[in-house]
Length: 126
Image (cartoon, rainbow, N blue to C red; front, top):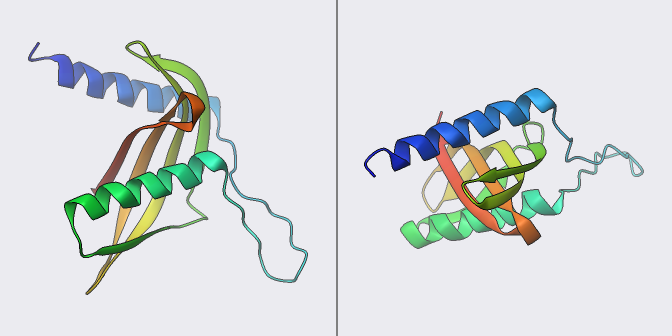
């Protein structure tokens, strides 16, 4: 059982790599009706942002908000499994974690399962 976390990490990396090879679905609405750019988020992206914010706030009360860089957001829709758990989407983005005294740019990975349930959120330093 010592190898389970390593195998899970390998499986996640393989799945993300496969999903990236399959192409990405843009999560932005490029309509421009008022002269300013209007970008709406897909439900998977918003649920990932909200879940990530909750997770960070549980670890640190200094966290105020998580802002997605909309130009970097990639929503990858998949129909796959990790072990016996269905995976429906992967969200990749650059995010800005706003704290009371400072901001920090990080990479963000989120895996979404059935019915929009967030299975995993990962923030990593660039």
